[in-house]
Image (tube, rainbow, N blue to C red; front, side, top):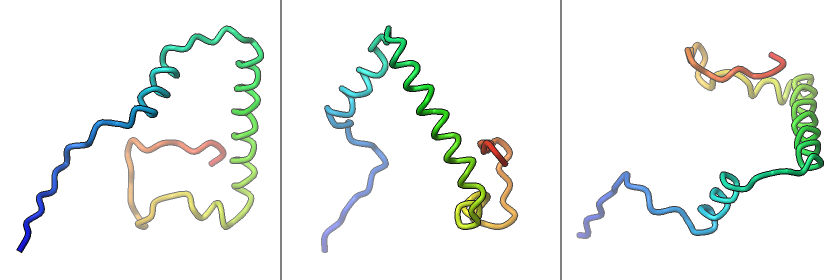
Amino acid sequence: MSSSSHTAARPAPDRVLTDIADYVLDAGIQSDLAYETARYCLLDTLGCGLEALEYPACAKLLGPIVPGTVVPNGARIPGT
């Protein structure tokens, strides 16, 4: 009979993930075009999300999985 022990300790993240995180944290953005593009991407994402609320199949995914659940510090969803 073999015994397996489970641990909650996480392994170290992959090198690629740490490289990406370091780049995101340390890279300075001086390009006005980069900020403008990011702004348009954010506006497009919010617009798509708001439009999705018009479709019952999407709107039903909002709210708690278990009926009656209350999350005092839950995230607010734009458009609701």
